[in-house]
Length: 445
Image (spheres, helix red, strand yellow):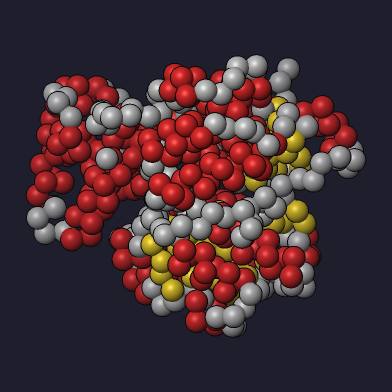
């Protein structure tokens, strides 16, 4: 019989992950995972090597969401290297350092030691964010707190949060650093509702010297959680400690957050991180080659840098894919790169926009899943993204109403017409909605 962790992982893969990860990435990386229960609150994903670990970690927000939805429990999820050492870890004899570490008082950190200021590639689009993050980590500029970093997926926001935490841990080990993805923050709070352990939850976060919160867009639509977040934020900030947060959009675009929260988020230093320019992309690829000791020909690096421009994560994914191919014995040449990466890049061509692409961009923007958009759920946090996605499918593709309805899980054409008309009308008067749709259209390409 499969263990509880294996059942959860298999169901998460079958119902969520396979539908949102490319077939090549899933077969190359996700099939190598060996899950097990590290403790009552943690599922560990054990993998054979660091390369696979790094790639799985790129998808951790998606993985955590899938596991939470399947298990209906606020599990912590960590990735560890060494499938053959599972039993040793269970007996407390791990040979490899886990991703999660213990902090003072038994608090858990989720800092990735590989994400530092030293290996963050600085370019025109992120230089200000890098400088501000360093200043906060060195306690040189308290006026930067709260530090609010926003931008699209894969531009380096999470890297900078981890870099702040790792720097403080190294230089000021007596300081209490807590890094937490918002989704886990929410899940822990839900767990406290069930166990009535609110005081423990509040003490855990409000005593932090550096509170680093990732992807706060996940607070939207969660009124009770916003109340708890507001008081936690105030407690840390007003005690003279440091708060850094990331999001995929500016504070004023978080329309379902309370006004007092968006006002607080805007009170410090708000920085927009732009996708890397060509020179920065080349530098990132050269750094990856040196770090992993992989010879990547210049024409291959230039090919990837020219044709993968949206974010760093896609660039790293392409690099890891080619590296995996080389480990199988195939030489890395331009021809091989063009063939292997053909589903990622379309050099010299306009990117085709289809319903899947629209749904992918919209779901990432709003922090929901494609499965949510295709479902029958009627909660506002799902209805609005679904209507925007239907509107954009009508605007940006040649799909008929019936085809759009089919793409969204078999909705009828009347539902599609209603969604299109509502968004079209609301765009005339709702400036926040206009900002959201404009931002999504920019990401569609």
